[in-house]
Length: 337
View 1: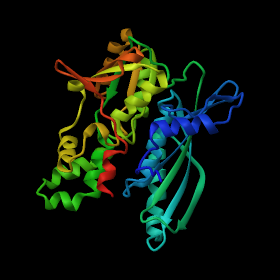
View 2: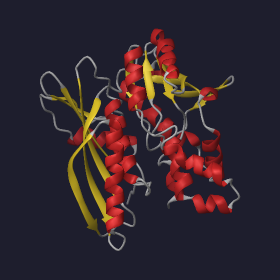
View 3: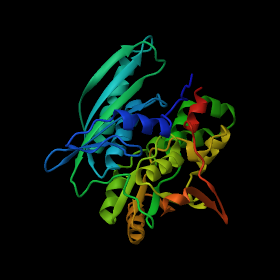
């Protein structure tokens, strides 16, 4: 019997299921599709943008993660996140009043930072899990003119990446494996700084998306999460039906991320990467978008050019081109299995 590894469903299986079981509706502007970050529903003069995403890797500050990860997908559609709901599952035997309050307090703190209203949800103590799980739902809105889809790339466009590879993975590894890292001799201050990647440079891309959209003609955006930037690139290319030439030597990665991935033999291209934003744009808009992001002290790098479909997804390092690596499961799952 075929079984799936931990993480996202494989692209081919997901595409098959979506094709077989997606409903159509005259008000459904963006239905479920490979590479699209959220659903979009016509509400008259506004478009409602809706997203749900769970947090399963992290255990500390899990509510903070849940709000920001869901807000990121709303922002990647060119929308403003407005309302948040959550399903909070606490494990039997671990559910204390202090744990419940810490999760809800972290949700409240993150939502307040983004100007989002927590408007409902559900909380329970349940069997069959060994750590808290938060499943978030974010609602936002945009206009028809402001909507950005993952399917808007065309040959000749550029791709920009903000911040760098593996931001969320860096925070998770440093937090969940702290004792082990210290036992291996890593500097405690550097481990603490890596854990703080949750906040600095941070896992939110709401500001990145708004600045980019205001600066130039953005044609696509995508928030790379599970499976890392490599999987995000595959999803963008699949949604748009294009090829990509990725500049491997230009891919930004922080020394802390490089070190922690090397410590556990993980490929930084395939680790969970909330905090980075992939931005597609017309080539003539690239300079203005890069300048606006950098002026806002958001690191940004042109990392790829969009090619015709037959080109495939090729990564160039020096004079060599090799296929972009694929990851059946997020690299970070190897730390928890």
